[in-house]
Length: 438
Image (cartoon, rainbow, N blue to C red; front, side, top):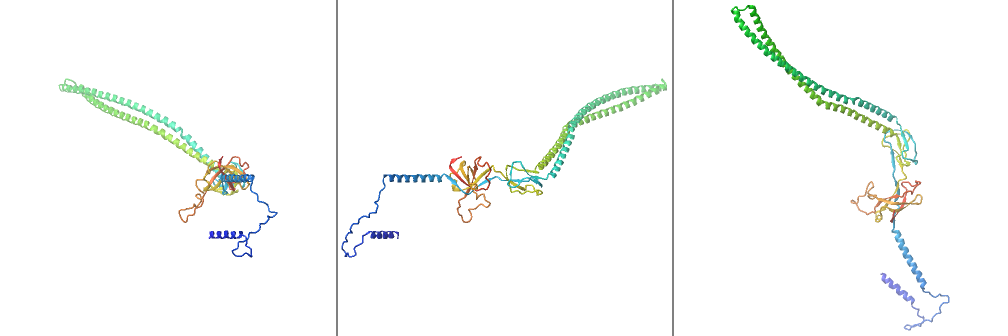
């Protein structure tokens, strides 16, 4: 259809260009050519481009080509986005202990220094706890001082006991020797008494024969008989003495055994007794350490009654008033440091092909209409969608491909914001130069 319309338009144009036939011309007669017309006096002759014109045209076309190429290279030399904002740390100031707020020294948007006191809690209860802990520490130290001398005393006492037991053993052995000698003497006396008794019995037998013949007097016989009975009694006495001496030897030997047992016990118990006293000292020292830790904790809790600024920055979101009861971990305010800011730019994933760390970045801050200098620090480990509360799950439902955005961290160069005018959350338009580095 388009070709037929083009042919029709060409035919009509050709018919329009043909000269009109005279009105009185007969059919089949060749029309007469019209008389030549004289050119109009005001018509200007057409001029062709001269050498200069062709040169100018070439220059213009070359400039346009060069300019187009430069424009194309410029547009390909950077990546930019308007999905970016200033980020920074926000420190939550919380109470580490419970208590009642005594005083608040700052207001919202106030500049503070690190270590500056922001809030005071009532320290009365914690002062009492410190006093109690200090008293417990002093008591434990006193107990340690009381039991420490027992170690040396026990050591000296047990050493003395061991020495005494050795002396007792020596004395017992000497008693055994003496009792043995007494026993041997008693045995010798028994032999002597038996010999005297035998002699006395022999004398008595002879005197019996003599008294029967009346060769001696009755008085002499009675004396001999009495002497024989006396010798027999003496023999019995000597035997009894020997038996007693034997029993004394056994008793002395038993005392030797007892002294040796006591000495052995003293030697064996001495280290244990010293160790027991050392253990008591160590136990008291451990109790002192425990009480000291309790004192340290009480002092820490007392120091926590003064809540200080963690860093230099601006106070915000203050939620603390005098008389307010706070719990451990309760947030009282926030501190935003203004000397450690960066930019989080959410670039499309297709813009990251040639982006690399340390590339120069121009940051246009909408709030002030001013450009700042920075550089690419790093790229996030996942896209923003993956870090969201409910990340998309493409394995279910109808899948629609969406170009993801990946957070890129941009660091401001030092000295870019000496007056600390930048604030986290401000909109920024970063332009990352893909060729130049920092």
